[in-house]
Image (cartoon, rainbow, N blue to C red):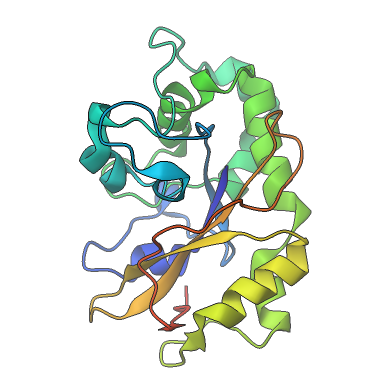
Length: 223
């Protein structure tokens, strides 16, 4: 599953955000990760595919090893080397920036995603990151929403059904959405989850819905 994240919603929270090398990224959906998922959750406390596709670390900490919904850390010794993705770094800087204040180096973010999820993808680092970049480049999700009249605003809210329909029409595939809360507790579009095939080459319809933390109307904050 390809996770595309709206930076305005990452930043418009109580914890805020920081920019890599003090350079503000573009106001566009950036890559969060490319995660392989099980068809069904495994182990005790199964949650089903719907919850398997929630995909954030907070949910993982809740599910834990009692009910695994995706593989992770499949090869702890397989560290990412800058040399392996040297020809992709410029594109990754633009499309996969870190916004965390814990570490402002995007390479550390990429390394974390590779070690936790990429090592379970059956792909080499070059292919893993290249395919994530290709999924992002295939569709300008912010432009798709803008064409549907859904534009960043500090005050406007939009029907979440309109957001979902716009993404489906613009990309050709049903996606899942995740919302978070701004500093005032209002729901805002945080991530678009695009399901991919087993070879991580093509988008597919997401087979089931999932808990989204979205309300009937959501914000798309300015970045």
